[in-house]
Length: 268
Ligand code: IPD
Ligand code: CA
Ligand code: CA
Image (cartoon, rainbow, N blue to C red; front, side, top):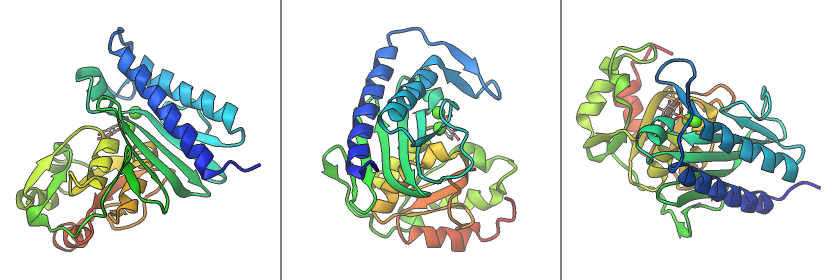
């Protein structure tokens, strides 16, 4: 029998909270830290343990569902047929290691490529942002208000400063005027949290040149549910298999940024 959305949502909430508890308990223990692709790309024993926790629970409760996780303990995902759980066990690992805050667990459930459940758990604040497609977005029991139209001059933009230095993906001369014209910029170091903050109206926009599907699969659903806009930096749909750039914002702001700042972008 097909699992109902309600059933998946109930289990997902239970597991994400339990996983968060494990991460908070781990603050008292010594972390085992390894380098992945470079000295700034780190993974800990807890990233792996949390992904394993989800994989074990999902496979025993929902056999037939597949898992697309950052640490590769789930399935080798080449398409989004059927039901796929897209998971980042710790989004913001550098913050987890250096700060013991400003990180999240991100979880999205996709059916035939369509997001039906999105969750971002701010572990240290014990705040769960969650949405079921078509039913609005919430922080714990509090419904998030629909986003109002915004404009660049009154916006707080979240962005990693590295994108206004020389890079392969965008001409920094395009982004510098945007940084100059907004009311302020922020950078939290956890894409999932930044997406949740846009959904909650604490940030007006978030822009980045390179994310993987597990970074945004949970958070973009929250934004869609409150009427925000979601695309890559060319205005095209996100790629839930390969990832890429991402630009999310309040309505109105999206159009203004494309028209005034991003239209000259020729890099990929
Ligand atoms: C990273 C964070 C960070 C973003 C990176 C991601 P991780 O995820 O979301 O904010 O700028 O691109 O890789 O590695 O901590 O799960
Ligand atoms: Ca991540
Ligand atoms: Ca991660």
